[in-house]
Structures are given as C-alpha cells and as structure tokens.
Amino acid sequence: MDAAAELSQESGFVAESGAAKMQERLQKRHQARIEDAERRKEDKERQAVAEEKGEYFSSTFNGERACIEELLSGCSGADRAVVTQILEEATAQTVQLQKFLNDSTLFLTQYELRQAQAALQKLQTSLAETREAALPKKRFAFRARTKAADKVAPPVSDTASPGAGTFEQSAQVDGAAAFEQCGFSNMENELLTKTSDEIQKRDVLLTHLTNCKVRLFGSPSTLHLKHIDSCEILCGPVSSSVFVDHCRNSILALPCQQLRTHNTTNTQVYLHVTSRAIIEDCHGVSFAPFSWSYPNLEDDFSVSGLDRDRNNWSQVDDFNWLAAGTPSPNWTVIPEADRKTNWDS
Amino acid sequence: MGLLTILKKMKQKEREMRLLMLGLDNAGKTTILKKFNGEDISTISPTLGFNIKTLEHKGFKLNIWDVGGQKSLRSYWRNYFESTDGLVWVVDSADRLRLEDCGRELSALLLEERLAGATLLVFANKQDLPGALSKEAIQEALALDEIKTHHWCIIGCSAVTGENLLAGVDWLLDDIAARIFTAD
Image (tube, rainbow over all chains, first blue to last red; front, side, top):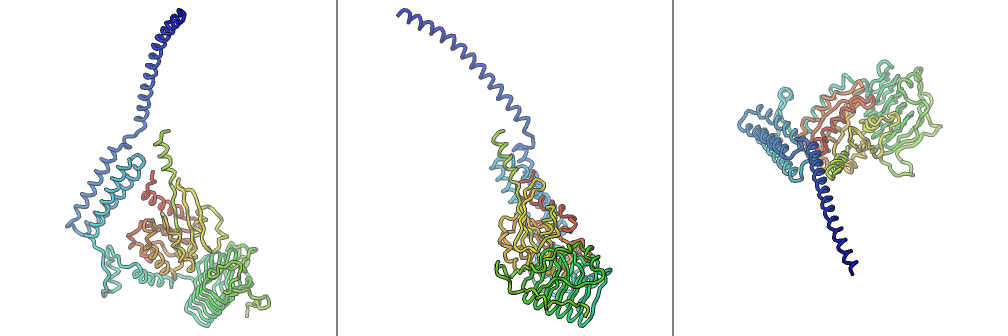
C-alpha cells in the first residue's frame, strides 16, 4: 500500500516535470512554425510580380477600355476619313487589350476573367456597331458603270459578293497571261515546236489546240494542257507535274514527276512518271511506257532531276474508282503489239 | 510545388493547334507539308485521301491535316472542318486558268460556320516558276481584301525551295495564339 502511494507520488512528480518539458517543446515548435510560415510568406511575396496582381490588371484593363470607348465616342458626326482612321486605331487597341487579357489568364480568377471577357465582348460589339453606323455596308444594286471609272476610285469598303469581283479580275489576269506565258494556244492543223532554250525551267501552257503536232524539246518545270483535240504532243522531261484537262482523241508522250489527268477521253499516254499518274472524270485513257527520243534527251533528263530508272507508268490512280481489288474501267494498258514505235512519221 | 504551379504547367501544356490545309489539286499542299517537315519532296504522289502530320514548332504542337484537292474529293473537305484553328489555303500562282475556280472554292469555304473562328493563311505557292503571278495579283484575283469575317494574310512562297514557308506558319501561329488563350 505504502509502496503504491510512494509510487503514485513519484509518478506524479515525473508527470509534473514532464508537462513542463512538453510545454516548452510545444512552445518551441509553435515558434518554429510561425517562423516557417513567415519565411514562406516572404518567399511568396518575392515571387509574385507586381503585374500579376488582380488590382494591377483591373486598373490597367479598365483604363485601356475607357480609352477605346472615348475614341469610339469621337466617331459620331466626324468625317468619313477620320472615322475610318479612328476605327482602325480602336480595332488595333482592342486587339492589344485582348492580348493583354490572354497573357493575364494564368493568374486571374475565374470571376475576373469572365468579367474582363464580357467587357471586351461589349467593346467589340460597340466597335462593330459604330463601324456599321459610320461606314454602312453597300447593299447589292445594279448600276451602270464604266470599267475605267471603277478602277480609278475603288470604294473603301466594297463588300459586294466576292464572286462578282473575281470574274472581272481574273479576266484581267488572263489577259496578262497572253503575253507572258510560254506555250501555244488557239491553233489548228499546225506543226509546232519549241527548243530547249525557250522552255528550259519554264512553265509551259498549251490550250485550245486542234489537230496539231507539238514537239517540245527541253525540260520545262511544269506543263499544262487544256482543251486539246486530236493532237500529238511530245515533250521532254518535266521536272514537276503535268496537268491535263479536257483532252480528247490525242496522243501524249512525256516524262514527269506527277501526271494529273482530268476530263480526258480516248487518249493514249506514253508515260515516264517517277511518282504517280492519276485520272479523274476520264474514260478511254490508255497508257504505255515513254518511248519517244531525241538527241539531247539524256541531258534534259539530268536537268529535270527525274530518276531514269523509276517509271510507274502502269500504276494509275483513278479518283472516280476507289474500289480496291477491282481494276478501274476508265483506263487500260496499251497492248505491246499496238504501241507506237515510230515517232517521226 | 503548389497546386497553382501544377495548374499553370498544365495550362501551358495545352498548346496544341489544328491546322487544315486545303486548295485545288496540284497547288502543292503535300509538298509544303513535307518540305516544312524536312522530308523528301521528289516522290510525292497526288493525294488520294489525306495526310496528317503532328509536329512541334515554336513550342506548339501542330496537327496539320492535308486533304486532297481533286474535284472528287472536295465534297469531303467538310469532314475535316471541326475544331480547326487555322486554315491554310494553297494557291498555284502559275495556274492562271483556274484562279477563278480557286477563288470560288475559297469564298465557299469562308461561309462555312464551322470554320468561322479560324485564321486564314493564303500561300501563293510556286513563286519559283517564271510565269507565277505575284502575291498582290493573287490577292486581287481572290478578292481577299473583301474578307472581313476572318483574320487573313497572304504570303508568296515556294514549296520546292522552301522560301517563306516558315514566315507564313509563324504568322499563323502568332495570330492563333493571340486568339485562343495560350499566349505567353
């Protein structure tokens, strides 16, 4: 009994001194924790840049926005040229503001971001409205006009359908083509030749030829054939693509990198092609390996850069015949017996 | 590393863009794609279907879709419109006879609702050919100045020599980056 009391007394003492120690330890720990928090706070403050603060953003953003709004309000009643200039400036500033917002998304809260986007949206709407009010779009209307007058004074914001403009302009473009383009067009029953000097590394165009024999000695960089009827066209190595459209009852012989054939009927092609030949909307087209030759052919082959040993003349892709396994009915291989061998006739 | 830092990093990782490359057949779309990616351009065949390339440029991940331009494939173009950030329209600057076609196809594309937000880059390709029209002439022929619905830019380039391809793609990326929230 006695021993037990003593023991309890002793343990009471131990507990007392233990509590004091514990308290001291807790105190220390608390102190350390505060210091640690303090240090982290400082770290964080050091990291945060002034610009990455919500207040900085909103004050700058609103300032800029007010600036643009003021610009826009200056539009009413102003001269057309002045308005155009103001609108341009306002548009540029709006784009800049958008960029500023974009750059700031990383540190903005969702709410701030939404607010700023809404404000920007409103700004853009009012910009569009001002533009509409000051520089109304032209409504379509028929009018008598001379071409010259039209050219001298192009309307500032002509928004007539783009198709209409394209027609007129491409007519001019075609006109320019007539004297610049290398090739032949609108001929009948003639023997036409071009020498290497005339076509080397050029883009050659043959159009609207009927019943002609064409010999192109040399290596053009591209070749376009369009509206060809009953012709025999022989050409040296073409370094890139050959484009054939609306050709019929003809014989072609050419080496090239790609052959693209469209709307062609009843035509024989003696072909050297290093990648692929394709046909689209064609029928009655037949193929055989290129067999025409002329004295400088080998030189022209090296100018063109075409691989003499790679000829995929018999691998023709038909864009109208995508069934794998069944051959396309639109093209055939010319049987060996029927191939043309004499080109000088 | 706090949660915010992780979030920031994740946001910066989402720098992915989808570019759609269209144009008439024989314009040079595949050649541009392969040249840009540093591949051999001498074996390119006319595209029967489409090519897709994923490449890294300027810290962006680009998914470039190159869809064949043959007439019979054009009706399938619309299958590729969804979530396109940038449209690259490739023009054969030497093909004067089909410029009108080219302009018509482009203006039809620009009316597409699903391409409404996309930035437009026009490549006036094949500038290495002596008969090529200047980019100003193409700009006029395609009536680009009348486009008010899209951000656009025209750049004269040559896929064969590689000239100006980088300048064009850089402009496109900058414009898209300023629009979608991934700019630095």
